[in-house]
Image 1 (cartoon, rainbow, N blue to C red):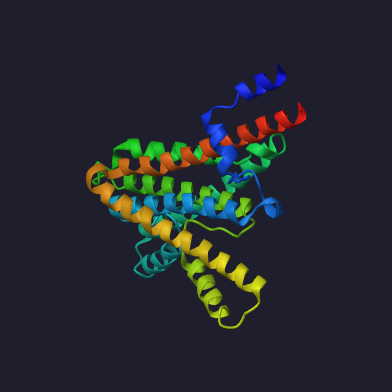
Image 2: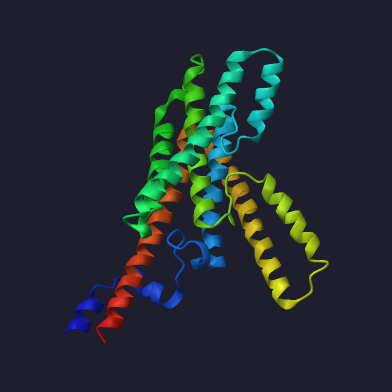
Length: 270
């Protein structure tokens, strides 16, 4: 009867997981506990999120919202031109990205002391909340009020700083999803190494790393492309797309956790 009770708890989605998945939870493993597939799935989804957020920032706000490298260049330019209002704005952009990274790690540290397996939920939830607020704000239509686009840009930079910090921590700096400069540098190095490293183990490691970076680049571009087309009709509401992706990531991770808990209970009751 005990077996029947436990089996009755397994829904169709759980049965699907039994046949086609391994332990592929994206967020719950960190450090040595992570595998290549963990990082590949995490990178694919979150780089798509970043690509969409970035194109919305460019088209709707005329602002890069997924990295701060360009903002330092603009800050220097405006300082040279003595436009100190713009200097202040670009400085605030940099601080909000930094603040997002700070908040993400602070929340992760606080939650991990009590619920290590759920330490990622709060930062992702905050990111979802910020993107929802921006997507529903409607402030993009008030371009006469300079503060409104600046506030929206700050919110998106905060969200991307938060996401990048979380992914960097979870993957132990293997995955970065919000900017591509360093990624292309690493990719160039690894493509060069293909000509020199011939060992089976070395080639396998290189090929996997190149594929991971290719997935990040491809998903970032796809997110930007999808977001660009969607922006023509939806405007800032295009941010509902990355919100949906983030909700899916949370649901998927929760589904697999439930499956493995049920599987463990079945094993213990045999």
